[in-house]
Image 1: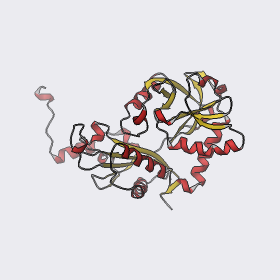
Image 2: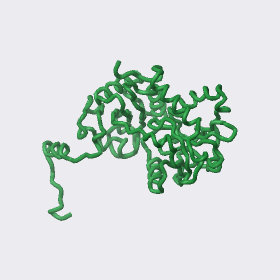
Image 3: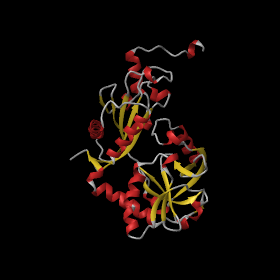
Length: 329
């Protein structure tokens, strides 16, 4: 490296000044962050950072959850925390706080962000301590909570439906499918393929060639017999939204609007024959799919089951306090 291109050595004050001055156009959505290494909550984006030697950064060694706060209530937080605890246990990671304390901390971070509608993300890492794959070099776990602005799908997507493609990116399988780890490289590649091929979303295939899941979405369909069919849990990360939707769908079965609900293998060719195809997710709720790689499916229009399930989810958020944690009383 030539002398004129050698970077300067910065002292503490210079480094802090540069960090503050860096342009961060993407950070306008960042509302508040808690870090157990800072021991508090910050609102300035330039302070929202994770140590580079945290195994979360260089090994993806950590687990996380993402949920939403609607009108001052964090939806399905208890279930998200239970899954976080299960994922942490699966990789032998002990959370520094229990679910009750985490819930209180989550509410504090959302309050600090000042927005009644926002996203909340919780990251639990192996922690800082070195750059090898040895988890025991990290003396204590890292805990980071982030509140950010939420960007829901435009209403037109629910009125017209979205375009779904079948991806060439393989699904996670077995043990790794069921752990919500921070190693999301397959998910990133799945989303990249969707964008580059002009799809709104993509769904991957499991090792046996059956439909699995999207980048951050679960997938399902209603077949010609009126069954709501969902992939089995073996090769997917079953989301809290799809689980809650399946529970609420029981009312549609009782009303005769669905023949039943089943989990089992779904073939690619089942898409073309489906009455309805839909996606489930924290920011999506229930989103109808009306095109597969640009070709019309389900008659090219959103179906009644997707519409009704979305209505039931939105009603659950608004009217069922047992499913949410109140941030502001």
